[in-house]
View (cartoon, rainbow, N blue to C red):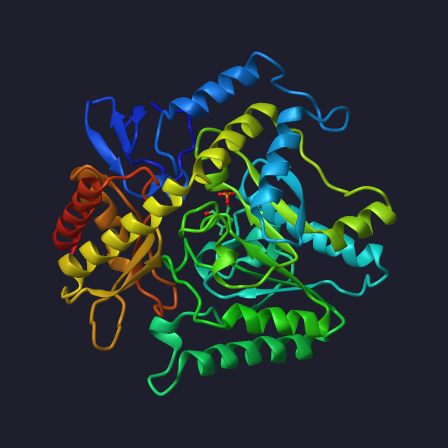
Length: 439
Ligand code: PLP
């Protein structure tokens, strides 16, 4: 009998015993293509020799030193690598142990920034419905996923939500993408005005929405308009790249595709590539200066921030993903994945939309393609697809639709960047068969 409180109690999970490249093997000898890198984590696949060597080398030096006493070469090196890759304006790095921690730290940085500059009246956070920013209390409050928030609502701090940028369902037939982007920007501005322009501290958004919508990117100009509105009211823009960042969509940072620079960026998942738990917040000079010239500290911290072994793994992952052939493969294999999914599932009456960027692709499953009517959530189509896919040796990341039935079930694919063409084709074949069997 298990002594672990698993995510779902009473399910008989297979035991993962080995990983190699894009494959995971279980204790029964079954092999699975890790078609979603877990939850968009394993960006270099499993057992990558260069990353393992980097971790081993670090273990021979210092494995842990509390960050209130010491810094380490490896943490300093990782921060320098990240700043060198980030667009100008993101000049400092705060290291944490995962995505939720990164979001919590970014929110507290935003709040402390305004306290430091004498604008402590700023306290409101605005984010978007159908977003996910993590499961800790502050991050959960920021996320707009009603199902995840429902039972915890009474203990969540107050946050505010506006519409996501979700063209498949929300852009009207008569609307051009620019008009749609303008409408969403106007909605944000109206919310800011309602709360008081001098009382809002941050707007938080995922550049490409992962867990709650399934690889939904913004329409052109959306983030440029959002940036302008944030600037107009002096509000910090926080982009959450925990899932879509670190090369996942074909550029190291997702924001590079939007032509804007936010004030704070959160990264995790692909940063450690699953080899180590690590995340980070990149912040602007303006925020760093406010702390440095104000109280002289960031009033935050966890025991494992800046962990040397995690930093060693991340430093090697970053070094590898920035090699030109890596991003080229993400783009080429991403195109192949989209084309394969279009060919195999584009005509399916149950696949409403196939979308995404790079090796971050999503399929929305619907009961009626013309009306975009989702399946009854009680049918748990996403869970059935997951089961059928695993039986066929494929790990994909399916999620249920919204509790109000407005958005459908979806499946997220996020395979490792080292994937090869024949392996992409196997993902498509296995997923198509799993969807057919599940519905
Ligand atoms: N932010 C986004 C956009 C995510 O997708 C996730 C996890 O899926 C998180 C934050 C939370 O990250 P973690 O699970 O590492 O705490």
